Image (cartoon, rainbow, N blue to C red; front, side, top):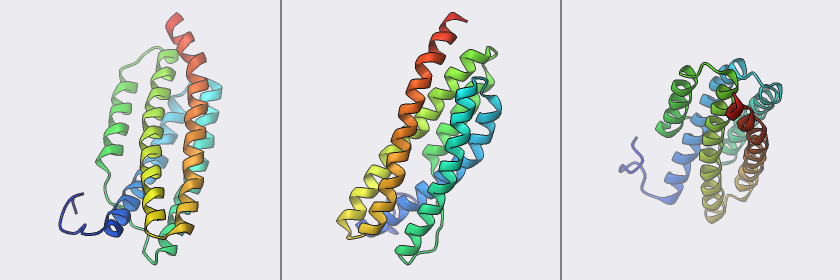
Length: 168
């Protein structure tokens, strides 16, 4: 089902489709994070990725609760955006020999993921509220706050790592 096909006729259809999209994205992120943990050399970055992996697993469980509240089966639809962001991250990371510069690239890639998630969750919350799914909106808002906090932590790490990368 493409984003703008006849299968999406209502805001509810669009909402469900985007919920399936972010469900796919979160599952792909749980596959990508262990690789990022292995590549990271800064201890704080490695620890941050480990923490976010656990958070992401909780976010997937929260999405599954949202599907339940909607009376829907938790199902994923391919998200080309997250696939592209992860592919780009892998390509860039594979081209960097200096470990400090690699850490800077990993942070940039992680922030690209976070920014995608922040936009998706913001939209989903607005639609959930519009459609009267207040309990689902609350679940999604909890995840949105985690995503924003992760982005802020990454920005803090980037300040230190980028300075070391520049000196390298």
